[in-house]
Length: 94
Image (tube, rainbow, N blue to C red; front, side):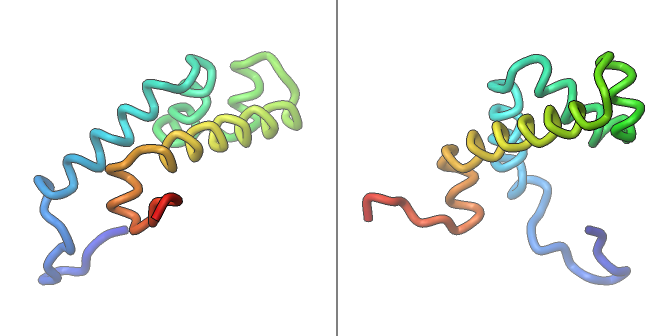
């Protein structure tokens, strides 16, 4: 998401730093394969076919692996207090 010219960003880079660190921490908790898949898709912009070729698996299996990696990341993010606070999640014990 990009700000339009002359629009002020909602948060400064410094204010976003704790969230970025929390996300990086969650990524580091993933398996090497999950990290590779998420980075290949988001950083390298690989297609599922390209990713499947690198992994040596079929495209349908690549989709399953992708979905599993993102589910694992989602679980970790949902359990991180910084992410929960930033996203406005309420604690279950309240």
